[in-house]
Image 1 (cartoon, one colour):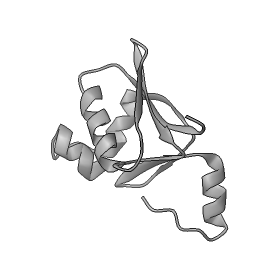
Image 2: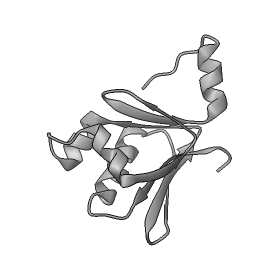
Image 3: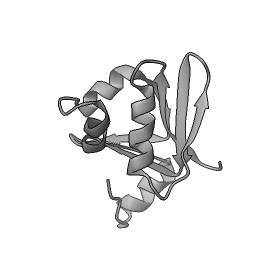
Length: 105
């Protein structure tokens, strides 16, 4: 993968559901999961989106996206957070957006 971005999650009970949610939110992106025992690296090329709506389908309607921060030990790329989503993207992608290209969450 040339420009991998995405979260690095501590192993826990909810990791598989988070992976499934990321795969659902990124149907046109190959998502690679690297299990390192104590943590899991989840990555896609250039841009990975995770929405609270999709997480709630897997983890329950009361799950808040900000709760993901307690599971995330690190990440690759730039993380852009809103009240309803997290987007990890390669840094140069954001520069293109500030030049007038659209970046969708």
